[in-house]
Length: 354
Image (cartoon, rainbow, N blue to C red; front, side):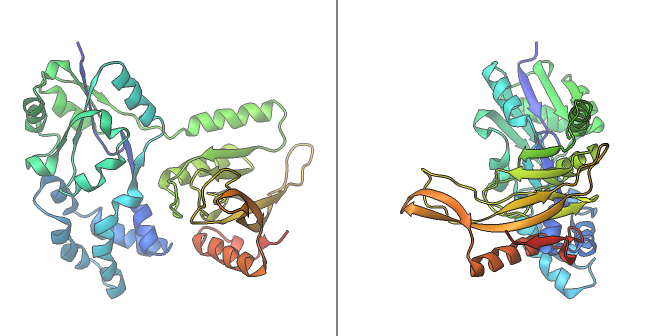
């Protein structure tokens, strides 16, 4: 009988997107970001973090030696110190799954190939309070798929292999677990593209002429969107949605021009009455114009209306109002900066106004 569920971390519980962190430090320059990624995350030394044979501090000069540009070399220590802020976030549905398994009485564990700094970002795991134990490869100086690390997990937490279900996105790691007597399951990561396509198709068949896809996504109070936002937003456009609008971060994020449409990653802090005084009061409204024909509609025309939150009474009733001239110019410049490198709308397609 299965009593224990053992999860891998990356691409099972958490999405792992190192390119996003590289893009942030490269200020949207994709070629520079790819060079940083190759020098750090794709290098043969990266696995040495997981095995415990190397630290981020030790990796830095090795990665810098792979880069020719001095400015890019200077970014390496900073990127290694906080890469996890951008690259790790829960996969859709995993928070609910972990909660459901816990409520059903299963004991939940993490067995992850990760470096010594794992403890600084384990808070990103969905419901860490429900976990009965965590085993990190660097701390044990052994790494999946070595069968010894699975036996070490069982020994450390007094588990019987035959009572464990191990879930990983690597077939080799699953085989390593199965060799010790565990039940293994290779996790087939899905990003929801098929569901989005089916939903858009159903709406079109029902006679909808305009499909606006709205997603509650991203990380609160971070102005850099996640890789999962981009994956889902682009999938919606490819599936036939006319525009994508994001909510939840409570902060302005960039706008991506994609396949004759737009992905509005976050409109900002649209807070209405009863809230405490927010630190960031910038936001914008999107005025979208569609020209609809009998069998299709033209690409949308987008106008950004910068807004600010104000108050009728101090501390309450914070409501969006159209920004004054100075704030409008500042907010629009902020949106443009966050949208840098994400399409050609900067060349006049995106306009500011009422």
